[in-house]
Amino acid sequence: MNDTSMNPILTRMRQPGPKKILACDGGGIRGLISVEILARLEAELRHHFAQPDLLLGDYFDFICGTSTGAIIASCLSCGMDMAMIRNFYLIHGVSMFERARWYLQLHKKYEAEPLAGILRQAFYDQLQGHPTEQQDGDAVVELGDPRLKGLLMLMLRNHSTDSPWPVCNNPLARHNQPERNDCNLRLPLWQLVRASTAAPTFFPPEVVTLAPGTNQEYSFVFVDGGMTTYNNPAWMAVQMATASPYRINWRTGADQLLVVSVGTGNAPAARPDLRPEELWVLDHAKSIPLALMNSATAGWDMVCRIVGECRFGGPVDREFGTMMQAPGMPADQGNWSGAKQFAYVRYDPLTNREGLNALGLSQIPEQDLAAMDDVRKIPQLREVGSAYAERYVLLDHLSGFL
Image (cartoon, rainbow, N blue to C red; front, top):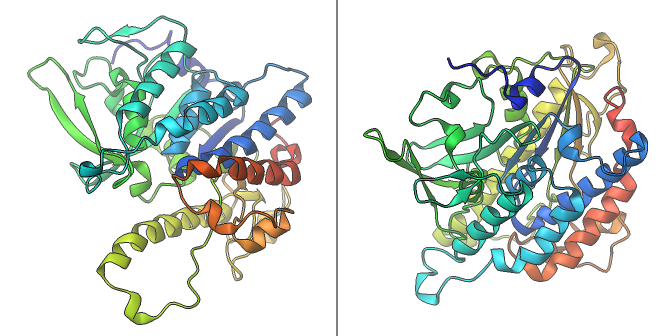
């Protein structure tokens, strides 16, 4: 293994003390809900530390994201503040969802190139002109760029191998060794993010070439990371940070590891008047992928609330509840039979009629927030995120990690 002792990512990864993870869900343009929640968190941290320029990329040691969460995670890792990320969505939101030509819409609803170009330029501009030259001469930021703020993980689905692909910039990871022709650290960051956002029927898949220009060159076809069970990447982040094969090996414990998980709005697609005869092939094709994605998102949230010390989160369902408990509660008085492995916070607004009313947003129709690609609803999405954040985002949830 080549010497990595001077790598700033590795230096930060090995620093002593408690570690903090941020995990960002997928959800298309609903990512603006997450943006407003994180903007509030950033403002609270800046006030607490009396640092008006503090960045979430400096506070969190490990930032993870799926789909639109991969955009947010990568922007944070590149050193953007939340005002910049909000403007990124407001300025480019419509461009990111540029309709494909009508004769292509059986394969894809939107074009890939606008989003690819936007991401490529944004990452390059943010890191201010010290590019890596690819074989085609284009300046790009790579996954292994040492100027990234810390550990970054993006969730993709490798459609060629039928497997989830959590790609991380950890210098010690098995597939990140520089002597490998197919070292993941040399992959363009923009392309990995584009792959993580390539939702089937919305965007075309992304073809990523590894070991380019060598006799070992090969390619994989990737689609949206939400097409795995990790649209909510919080548990995958914990797994990567603590399981020995990933070689990060951070300590566990509710005083050693914090996980802040941010969703894009929880809107159950209830159909109280559903008739059995309506369940035919097209209806299943439209509803099953989202149903599986939502179930997996809730499932990993439940795992984190059991294994972790849940400091905040809305009810998962009427039986499970919130599983919240006070920090430091003895194991024999806790809400499961084992010791808590990390502190856990889940921010995810309920965006059905009940949830919107509770936020004082009765004027917003709940159907306005259901679609992942309706850029006309950007103002309403921001309103929901801001109202939720103002009411629920508190630094008390981060006690012991400030």
